[in-house]
Image 1 (spheres, rainbow, N blue to C red):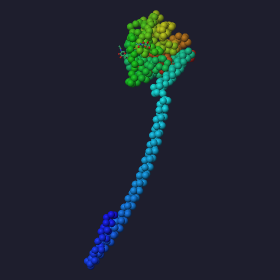
Image 2: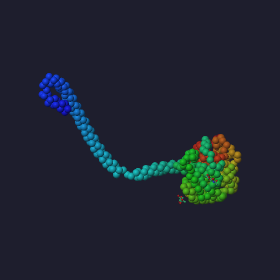
Image 3: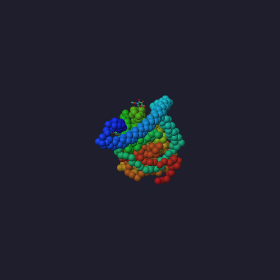
Image 4: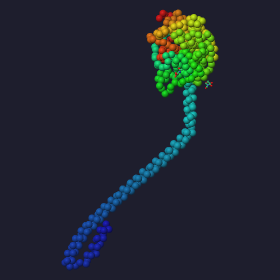
Length: 402
Ligand SMILES: *[C@@H]1O[C@H](CO)[C@@H](O)[C@H](O)[C@H]1NC(C)=O
Ligand SMILES: *[C@@H]1O[C@H](CO)[C@@H](O)[C@H](O)[C@H]1NC(C)=O
């Protein structure tokens, strides 16, 4: 725009000097130039105006943007301020709560306590139930040996395995062979069956060797016939395998308890009433004698002479104070219960039917009755097997022939 004005000024200054025809031509020429320049000036001024307008527009647009930017900025600031005050508030609340909530370890202790209380209550219930059953309902009699389940085949051809008869316990014990100084304790029959789990069995080393297949666990203690003695019973604390007590069973140890298991002289048993020892007495025609033991003191509570033969027998077990003797053949056949002896004298062998085991060739080296499960845990020629049994009340025993 400054350029437009300067060229106009120069032309105006030179014009009055020219006056000849040549001059007239020159004047014409200059006039044309002037017109031309004027046109350009106009154009120039116009575009200058346009430029100014555009500049103006841009500036105002920019101002508008700037002001909206300011608005956004101030909005953000307000929000940030409110955020920070909210954070402060939450922090305050957290601090308050932290002061009110007890430390985490206290909570865990309370949960453990609760769990313990629940377990105690359950145990108490089980105990009451067991006691009631013992007082009112120990009139259970065996009526049939039903289904068979082969659980596993491990260890020696001879041995014993059984579930802990203590109410509420799921532990299982395994003593392989006829002579050893260790036993295996499993947390459950399932963990024994599944075998290769991460929790292997607990190996309990005993203070002396056991002999035969007549061992039992009763209320946290293992009872077994001490090897190389005719009639000594050892009582061992199971948690740590230390000896708690020993006793001698008078008159025992001269004859195997069952002729088909010549290495077992003292066969222990547990039933609803407590702890028993079964042995054969040569002075009594080789018949079986049962002795009730006081588990706390190992004192003999009472002894009963039975009319059941040890000859041809492979094992026996107790249910509610009744001895059931299992017979077989020397070469293994179908086991059957052919003799029983009830210390309460309510059921009698001669009136009771022979009870056959499921159809199968067997050769049992040990048999354990589990009162809660109503099952027999058996060691059959190296197989660990379980029989389900059926029971009925003693006063309802049917006296049929089969
Ligand atoms: C005793 O038992 C353990 C485990 O069942 C077995 O490894 C060991 O060989 C046995 N010892 C004897 C002398 O049989
Ligand atoms: C084994 O346990 C009993 C009873 O819990 C305890 O009196 C005894 O000292 C323990 N013995 C060993 C060697 O740990």
